[in-house]
Image (cartoon, rainbow, N blue to C red; front, side, top):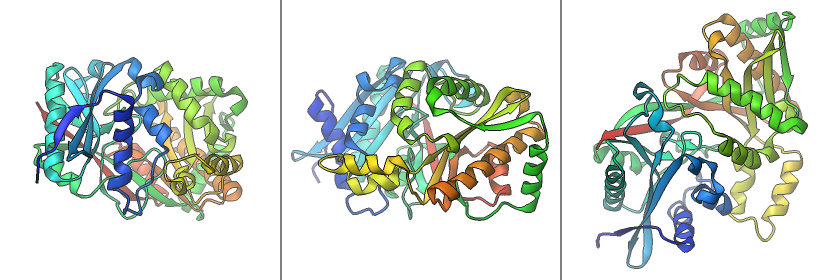
Length: 383
């Protein structure tokens, strides 16, 4: 086989080719969900992605006989460089992601190319795949290939694991998603904890008010940046990123699916739940034209879905070791569970990702009879 030629992308046409490759490589995979091409282009276009306000990236294409056969991004997040080294990032740690390849040799060459770029930028360690921010699609799918991912979760070919580990990488962190049958009531002990919270006049679990989107987002961001600040891989979200996320997610934000917990009138916890947009976009094959946009708008009016995803949940640090923290979590989960079933027809929930060492959240998930349905590995290697 002729070795692939690898080159940095230099044009808008290159970016389109970068986005197009997975559509060919996963064409026969029934569990791959084609992203909307405009969204995928926006992710890698600095003018359209607020993450680039504190990061830089180089994208590479692998070509053979005039055809694209692989892709990868190499990137450096300047905020990640300032994080404590014992939390995964820190000085000298760069990343790579958006990795796809037609064959093992091309995959190895792409990873080596990304490593060379990171070394040239002064990096001494690489983590991957992270595509492209830790808040987007971190990790390589290593278990759970038999069903599609939910919104904002990744998919990959099973052989990628061997290719990455064969390049000298070892797993540094596992991320889990948990599956839950939300048509069933929670175990009696959980129901008693919820009822106790409902009798406590200090506690209020409220819906967000979408008409005050920016104000509510600021409350959630304050809790998030406090609650997650000691977690592995944490990088604070910045105003440009929040603005972009708001534009993308506002159409699937519904008041009854996002809750804020208040104690003595102070917001101390939140839970965000999103209808699984992947169910709606999968049939569109990446295109909103000619009729995809109309179908999507109709769906967004009042989505009926099988699955709801909980991408983010947090409790302020001062409460994290207390019994109230789990009580607030159970209450928010239960109220959103009821709304998901009654108003959206959902039967399944997915919670995560959750870090392998986040014993608090893993315990909550297991107590309500969740089971792990997907595992994602983040790999590391000294350069």
